[in-house]
Length: 388
Image 1: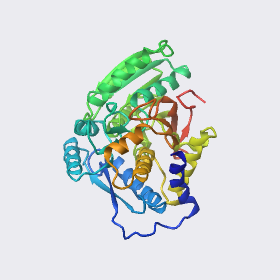
Image 2: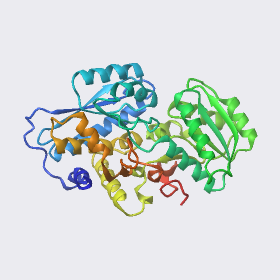
Image 3: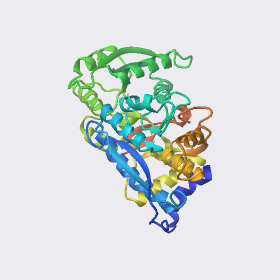
Image 4: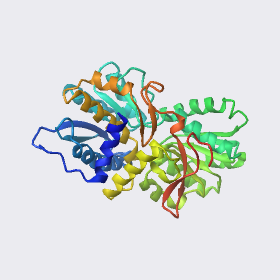
Protein backbone atom coordinates (compact mmCIF):
# COMPACT_ATOMS: atom_id res chain seq x y z
CA UNK A 1 0.00 0.00 0.00
CA UNK A 2 2.77 2.46 0.89
CA UNK A 3 4.55 1.84 -2.40
CA UNK A 4 1.33 2.30 -4.36
CA UNK A 5 0.56 5.67 -2.79
CA UNK A 6 4.16 6.82 -3.22
CA UNK A 7 3.97 5.91 -6.91
CA UNK A 8 1.06 8.28 -7.40
CA UNK A 9 3.34 11.15 -6.44
CA UNK A 10 6.43 9.90 -8.24
CA UNK A 11 4.74 10.22 -11.62
CA UNK A 12 4.54 13.98 -11.29
CA UNK A 13 8.28 14.19 -10.91
CA UNK A 14 9.24 11.69 -13.61
CA UNK A 15 6.91 12.85 -16.36
CA UNK A 16 5.16 9.52 -17.04
CA UNK A 17 2.85 9.88 -20.06
CA UNK A 18 -0.84 10.65 -19.38
CA UNK A 19 -3.43 7.92 -19.02
CA UNK A 20 -4.19 6.10 -22.25
CA UNK A 21 -7.73 5.33 -23.25
CA UNK A 22 -9.34 8.49 -21.91
CA UNK A 23 -12.44 7.63 -23.93
CA UNK A 24 -13.47 5.35 -21.05
CA UNK A 25 -16.29 6.68 -18.90
CA UNK A 26 -14.80 8.71 -16.03
CA UNK A 27 -15.18 7.43 -12.49
CA UNK A 28 -16.86 10.17 -10.44
CA UNK A 29 -15.18 11.07 -7.15
CA UNK A 30 -17.44 13.43 -5.21
CA UNK A 31 -16.00 16.41 -3.34
CA UNK A 32 -18.07 18.50 -0.92
CA UNK A 33 -16.51 21.89 -0.22
CA UNK A 34 -17.51 25.41 0.92
CA UNK A 35 -16.93 27.27 -2.31
CA UNK A 36 -19.14 30.08 -1.00
CA UNK A 37 -20.19 31.28 2.45
CA UNK A 38 -18.06 31.71 5.54
CA UNK A 39 -15.77 28.77 4.71
CA UNK A 40 -14.97 29.86 1.15
CA UNK A 41 -11.29 30.35 2.08
CA UNK A 42 -11.17 26.55 2.47
CA UNK A 43 -13.01 25.96 -0.77
CA UNK A 44 -10.35 27.75 -2.81
CA UNK A 45 -7.73 25.38 -1.44
CA UNK A 46 -9.93 22.38 -2.18
CA UNK A 47 -10.22 23.48 -5.80
CA UNK A 48 -6.42 23.70 -6.01
CA UNK A 49 -6.09 20.26 -4.41
CA UNK A 50 -8.50 18.72 -6.90
CA UNK A 51 -6.70 20.28 -9.86
CA UNK A 52 -3.38 18.74 -8.81
CA UNK A 53 -4.48 15.36 -7.51
CA UNK A 54 -6.73 14.59 -10.49
CA UNK A 55 -3.67 14.83 -12.71
CA UNK A 56 -1.62 12.66 -10.35
CA UNK A 57 -4.27 9.93 -10.26
CA UNK A 58 -4.97 9.88 -13.98
CA UNK A 59 -1.30 9.96 -15.02
CA UNK A 60 -0.83 6.79 -12.99
CA UNK A 61 -3.70 4.90 -14.63
CA UNK A 62 -6.86 6.19 -13.01
CA UNK A 63 -9.01 3.37 -11.65
CA UNK A 64 -7.92 0.33 -13.67
CA UNK A 65 -7.76 2.37 -16.85
CA UNK A 66 -10.77 4.57 -16.19
CA UNK A 67 -9.95 8.25 -15.67
CA UNK A 68 -11.16 9.81 -12.44
CA UNK A 69 -13.24 12.98 -12.48
CA UNK A 70 -13.39 14.93 -9.23
CA UNK A 71 -16.73 16.74 -9.03
CA UNK A 72 -17.00 19.59 -6.50
CA UNK A 73 -20.38 20.23 -4.84
CA UNK A 74 -20.65 23.65 -3.16
CA UNK A 75 -22.27 23.30 0.27
CA UNK A 76 -22.20 27.09 0.79
CA UNK A 77 -20.89 26.42 4.33
CA UNK A 78 -24.38 25.18 5.23
CA UNK A 79 -25.13 21.93 7.13
CA UNK A 80 -28.57 21.85 5.52
CA UNK A 81 -26.98 21.95 2.09
CA UNK A 82 -24.61 19.15 3.09
CA UNK A 83 -27.55 16.92 3.98
CA UNK A 84 -29.12 17.59 0.59
CA UNK A 85 -25.87 16.87 -1.25
CA UNK A 86 -25.13 13.62 0.58
CA UNK A 87 -28.68 12.39 0.02
CA UNK A 88 -28.24 13.00 -3.71
CA UNK A 89 -24.96 11.07 -3.66
CA UNK A 90 -26.60 8.20 -1.75
CA UNK A 91 -29.44 8.10 -4.29
CA UNK A 92 -26.89 7.94 -7.12
CA UNK A 93 -25.06 5.15 -5.28
CA UNK A 94 -21.83 7.12 -5.03
CA UNK A 95 -19.04 5.26 -3.21
CA UNK A 96 -16.33 7.77 -2.20
CA UNK A 97 -16.60 11.37 -0.98
CA UNK A 98 -14.09 13.84 0.42
CA UNK A 99 -15.49 16.67 2.51
CA UNK A 100 -17.33 18.52 3.92
CA UNK A 101 -14.76 20.51 5.85
CA UNK A 102 -16.30 21.96 9.02
CA UNK A 103 -17.48 20.32 12.25
CA UNK A 104 -21.14 21.29 11.91
CA UNK A 105 -21.25 20.22 8.27
CA UNK A 106 -19.71 16.82 8.99
CA UNK A 107 -21.93 16.34 12.02
CA UNK A 108 -25.04 16.99 9.95
CA UNK A 109 -24.38 14.08 7.59
CA UNK A 110 -22.79 11.62 10.05
CA UNK A 111 -26.10 9.92 11.00
CA UNK A 112 -26.90 9.36 7.32
CA UNK A 113 -23.77 7.25 6.71
CA UNK A 114 -23.29 5.57 10.06
CA UNK A 115 -24.14 2.07 8.86
CA UNK A 116 -23.99 2.36 5.07
CA UNK A 117 -22.05 4.15 2.36
CA UNK A 118 -20.81 6.18 0.76
CA UNK A 119 -17.41 6.35 2.46
CA UNK A 120 -17.05 10.00 3.52
CA UNK A 121 -13.67 11.42 4.49
CA UNK A 122 -14.53 14.56 6.46
CA UNK A 123 -12.05 17.42 6.21
CA UNK A 124 -12.57 18.60 9.80
CA UNK A 125 -10.15 17.53 12.51
CA UNK A 126 -12.82 18.40 15.07
CA UNK A 127 -15.23 15.65 14.10
CA UNK A 128 -14.94 12.34 15.96
CA UNK A 129 -16.64 9.65 13.84
CA UNK A 130 -18.08 6.57 15.50
CA UNK A 131 -15.78 3.57 15.18
CA UNK A 132 -16.97 1.27 12.43
CA UNK A 133 -19.00 3.97 10.68
CA UNK A 134 -18.54 5.01 7.05
CA UNK A 135 -17.18 8.42 8.06
CA UNK A 136 -13.46 9.01 8.52
CA UNK A 137 -11.75 12.21 9.62
CA UNK A 138 -8.77 13.84 7.92
CA UNK A 139 -5.79 14.98 9.92
CA UNK A 140 -5.08 14.76 13.62
CA UNK A 141 -8.00 14.96 16.06
CA UNK A 142 -8.66 18.18 17.95
CA UNK A 143 -7.84 16.22 21.10
CA UNK A 144 -4.27 15.76 19.89
CA UNK A 145 -3.74 19.14 18.20
CA UNK A 146 -4.77 20.95 21.37
CA UNK A 147 -2.58 18.66 23.48
CA UNK A 148 0.44 19.33 21.25
CA UNK A 149 -0.22 23.10 21.30
CA UNK A 150 -0.51 23.27 25.09
CA UNK A 151 2.55 21.02 25.47
CA UNK A 152 4.58 23.38 23.30
CA UNK A 153 3.77 26.39 25.50
CA UNK A 154 4.18 24.37 28.70
CA UNK A 155 7.59 23.03 27.71
CA UNK A 156 8.74 26.56 26.89
CA UNK A 157 7.89 27.53 30.46
CA UNK A 158 4.72 29.47 29.57
CA UNK A 159 2.54 27.85 32.20
CA UNK A 160 0.02 30.65 32.84
CA UNK A 161 -2.38 30.33 29.94
CA UNK A 162 -5.57 32.05 28.87
CA UNK A 163 -8.25 30.19 26.93
CA UNK A 164 -10.70 31.69 24.45
CA UNK A 165 -13.29 29.53 22.72
CA UNK A 166 -16.58 30.03 20.92
CA UNK A 167 -19.98 29.20 22.40
CA UNK A 168 -20.96 26.90 19.51
CA UNK A 169 -20.42 23.12 19.19
CA UNK A 170 -16.81 23.59 18.09
CA UNK A 171 -15.97 25.70 21.13
CA UNK A 172 -17.78 23.40 23.52
CA UNK A 173 -15.82 20.44 22.16
CA UNK A 174 -12.57 22.40 22.57
CA UNK A 175 -13.46 23.29 26.17
CA UNK A 176 -13.91 19.63 27.07
CA UNK A 177 -10.62 18.71 25.46
CA UNK A 178 -8.75 21.58 27.11
CA UNK A 179 -10.03 20.50 30.53
CA UNK A 180 -8.79 16.97 29.87
CA UNK A 181 -5.37 18.16 28.65
CA UNK A 182 -4.79 20.36 31.69
CA UNK A 183 -5.68 17.42 33.93
CA UNK A 184 -2.91 15.20 32.51
CA UNK A 185 0.13 14.62 34.75
CA UNK A 186 2.62 16.34 32.41
CA UNK A 187 0.54 19.54 32.17
CA UNK A 188 -0.92 19.59 35.66
CA UNK A 189 1.54 22.23 36.86
CA UNK A 190 0.19 24.67 34.25
CA UNK A 191 -2.64 27.04 35.13
CA UNK A 192 -5.60 28.49 33.26
CA UNK A 193 -5.59 32.07 34.54
CA UNK A 194 -8.41 33.34 32.31
CA UNK A 195 -11.20 31.62 30.43
CA UNK A 196 -13.27 33.59 27.96
CA UNK A 197 -16.02 32.80 25.46
CA UNK A 198 -17.52 34.56 22.47
CA UNK A 199 -20.16 34.00 19.81
CA UNK A 200 -18.78 33.35 16.33
CA UNK A 201 -20.84 36.26 15.01
CA UNK A 202 -19.46 38.79 17.52
CA UNK A 203 -17.82 41.81 15.91
CA UNK A 204 -15.78 42.67 19.00
CA UNK A 205 -14.23 40.76 21.89
CA UNK A 206 -12.50 43.74 23.47
CA UNK A 207 -13.89 43.05 26.93
CA UNK A 208 -12.63 39.47 26.92
CA UNK A 209 -9.17 40.55 25.75
CA UNK A 210 -9.02 43.17 28.53
CA UNK A 211 -9.70 40.50 31.14
CA UNK A 212 -7.06 38.21 29.64
CA UNK A 213 -4.50 41.01 29.73
CA UNK A 214 -5.34 41.72 33.37
CA UNK A 215 -4.95 38.04 34.28
CA UNK A 216 -1.20 37.97 33.70
CA UNK A 217 -1.47 35.20 31.11
CA UNK A 218 1.80 34.29 29.39
CA UNK A 219 0.14 32.71 26.34
CA UNK A 220 -3.30 32.53 24.74
CA UNK A 221 -5.01 29.47 23.29
CA UNK A 222 -7.56 31.02 20.91
CA UNK A 223 -9.26 27.95 19.51
CA UNK A 224 -11.35 28.93 16.52
CA UNK A 225 -11.24 28.99 12.72
CA UNK A 226 -11.70 31.65 10.07
CA UNK A 227 -13.22 35.08 10.61
CA UNK A 228 -13.56 34.73 14.42
CA UNK A 229 -9.77 34.43 14.70
CA UNK A 230 -9.46 37.79 12.97
CA UNK A 231 -11.89 39.26 15.50
CA UNK A 232 -9.72 37.98 18.36
CA UNK A 233 -6.44 39.17 16.83
CA UNK A 234 -7.86 42.62 16.09
CA UNK A 235 -9.04 43.02 19.68
CA UNK A 236 -5.68 41.78 20.99
CA UNK A 237 -3.82 44.26 18.79
CA UNK A 238 -6.09 47.16 19.78
CA UNK A 239 -5.98 46.15 23.45
CA UNK A 240 -2.20 45.87 23.70
CA UNK A 241 -2.18 42.13 24.45
CA UNK A 242 1.33 41.09 23.42
CA UNK A 243 1.69 37.40 24.27
CA UNK A 244 2.16 34.27 22.13
CA UNK A 245 -1.09 33.00 20.57
CA UNK A 246 -1.93 29.55 19.22
CA UNK A 247 -5.03 28.78 17.19
CA UNK A 248 -6.53 25.85 15.31
CA UNK A 249 -4.98 24.25 12.20
CA UNK A 250 -7.94 25.26 10.05
CA UNK A 251 -6.43 28.75 9.91
CA UNK A 252 -3.29 27.62 8.10
CA UNK A 253 -4.10 29.37 4.82
CA UNK A 254 -2.07 32.02 3.03
CA UNK A 255 -5.24 34.00 2.43
CA UNK A 256 -5.83 34.35 6.16
CA UNK A 257 -2.24 35.17 6.94
CA UNK A 258 -2.37 37.95 4.35
CA UNK A 259 -5.68 39.26 5.64
CA UNK A 260 -4.41 39.38 9.25
CA UNK A 261 -0.97 40.82 8.46
CA UNK A 262 -1.72 44.14 10.15
CA UNK A 263 -3.00 42.58 13.37
CA UNK A 264 -0.78 39.51 13.64
CA UNK A 265 0.87 39.07 17.05
CA UNK A 266 4.65 38.81 17.19
CA UNK A 267 4.33 35.12 18.01
CA UNK A 268 1.49 33.36 16.15
CA UNK A 269 1.46 29.56 16.32
CA UNK A 270 -0.57 26.68 14.91
CA UNK A 271 -0.49 22.90 15.25
CA UNK A 272 0.19 21.71 11.71
CA UNK A 273 0.68 18.66 9.51
CA UNK A 274 4.29 17.91 8.58
CA UNK A 275 3.44 18.60 4.92
CA UNK A 276 3.83 22.35 5.47
CA UNK A 277 7.35 22.36 6.94
CA UNK A 278 9.58 19.81 5.16
CA UNK A 279 12.82 21.57 6.15
CA UNK A 280 12.37 20.86 9.86
CA UNK A 281 11.35 17.20 9.55
CA UNK A 282 13.66 14.33 10.45
CA UNK A 283 14.70 12.07 7.57
CA UNK A 284 12.33 9.19 6.96
CA UNK A 285 9.25 8.02 5.07
CA UNK A 286 7.09 10.99 6.10
CA UNK A 287 9.68 13.53 4.97
CA UNK A 288 10.04 11.67 1.64
CA UNK A 289 6.27 11.84 1.12
CA UNK A 290 6.27 15.55 2.00
CA UNK A 291 9.14 16.38 -0.35
CA UNK A 292 7.34 14.64 -3.25
CA UNK A 293 4.07 16.35 -2.31
CA UNK A 294 5.72 19.77 -2.27
CA UNK A 295 7.31 19.05 -5.66
CA UNK A 296 3.91 18.15 -7.14
CA UNK A 297 2.47 21.49 -6.07
CA UNK A 298 5.54 23.40 -7.18
CA UNK A 299 5.15 21.88 -10.63
CA UNK A 300 1.57 23.18 -10.66
CA UNK A 301 2.64 26.65 -9.51
CA UNK A 302 0.67 26.39 -6.23
CA UNK A 303 1.84 26.96 -2.64
CA UNK A 304 0.14 24.30 -0.52
CA UNK A 305 -1.56 25.24 2.75
CA UNK A 306 -3.94 23.35 5.04
CA UNK A 307 -6.81 23.39 2.53
CA UNK A 308 -4.65 21.76 -0.14
CA UNK A 309 -2.97 19.39 2.29
CA UNK A 310 -5.36 17.81 4.75
CA UNK A 311 -7.30 15.63 2.28
CA UNK A 312 -4.29 14.63 0.15
CA UNK A 313 -3.52 11.34 1.89
CA UNK A 314 -7.17 10.38 2.28
CA UNK A 315 -7.93 10.83 -1.42
CA UNK A 316 -4.90 8.77 -2.44
CA UNK A 317 -5.92 6.11 0.09
CA UNK A 318 -9.45 5.86 -1.33
CA UNK A 319 -8.03 5.71 -4.87
CA UNK A 320 -5.72 2.91 -3.71
CA UNK A 321 -8.75 0.99 -2.42
CA UNK A 322 -10.64 1.47 -5.69
CA UNK A 323 -7.63 0.22 -7.62
CA UNK A 324 -7.53 -2.91 -5.51
CA UNK A 325 -11.22 -3.75 -5.83
CA UNK A 326 -11.96 -2.09 -9.17
CA UNK A 327 -14.45 0.63 -10.17
CA UNK A 328 -17.35 -1.57 -9.06
CA UNK A 329 -16.02 -1.67 -5.48
CA UNK A 330 -18.61 -1.38 -2.74
CA UNK A 331 -18.54 1.18 0.05
CA UNK A 332 -18.05 -1.70 2.46
CA UNK A 333 -14.91 -2.87 0.68
CA UNK A 334 -13.43 0.65 0.64
CA UNK A 335 -14.30 1.19 4.31
CA UNK A 336 -12.66 -2.06 5.36
CA UNK A 337 -9.56 -1.34 3.27
CA UNK A 338 -9.08 2.00 5.04
CA UNK A 339 -9.73 0.44 8.45
CA UNK A 340 -6.73 -1.89 7.95
CA UNK A 341 -4.36 0.68 6.41
CA UNK A 342 -0.86 1.51 7.64
CA UNK A 343 1.39 3.87 5.66
CA UNK A 344 3.45 7.07 5.75
CA UNK A 345 1.81 10.14 4.20
CA UNK A 346 2.21 13.88 4.12
CA UNK A 347 0.14 14.26 7.28
CA UNK A 348 2.10 11.71 9.30
CA UNK A 349 2.38 7.97 9.85
CA UNK A 350 -1.04 6.29 9.66
CA UNK A 351 -2.20 3.26 11.62
CA UNK A 352 -5.97 2.83 11.44
CA UNK A 353 -5.96 -0.24 13.67
CA UNK A 354 -4.41 1.78 16.47
CA UNK A 355 -6.45 4.92 15.73
CA UNK A 356 -9.78 3.96 14.12
CA UNK A 357 -11.50 6.36 11.69
CA UNK A 358 -8.45 8.66 11.60
CA UNK A 359 -5.16 6.78 11.58
CA UNK A 360 -3.16 9.57 13.25
CA UNK A 361 -2.41 10.75 16.77
CA UNK A 362 -0.48 13.62 18.41
CA UNK A 363 2.80 12.21 17.12
CA UNK A 364 1.82 13.52 13.67
CA UNK A 365 1.59 17.14 14.88
CA UNK A 366 4.28 19.77 14.52
CA UNK A 367 3.81 23.25 15.95
CA UNK A 368 4.58 26.01 13.46
CA UNK A 369 5.05 29.79 13.70
CA UNK A 370 4.01 32.27 11.04
CA UNK A 371 7.08 34.14 9.80
CA UNK A 372 6.00 37.42 8.12
CA UNK A 373 9.46 37.99 6.65
CA UNK A 374 9.42 34.63 4.88
CA UNK A 375 5.67 34.79 4.27
CA UNK A 376 5.50 31.18 5.35
CA UNK A 377 5.25 28.90 8.38
CA UNK A 378 8.36 27.56 10.07
CA UNK A 379 8.50 24.49 12.26
CA UNK A 380 9.28 25.14 15.92
CA UNK A 381 8.61 21.71 17.45
CA UNK A 382 9.33 18.05 17.06
CA UNK A 383 6.49 15.63 16.37
CA UNK A 384 4.04 15.84 19.27
CA UNK A 385 4.72 19.48 20.16
CA UNK A 386 8.06 19.27 21.97
CA UNK A 387 10.00 22.50 21.24
CA UNK A 388 13.00 22.20 18.93
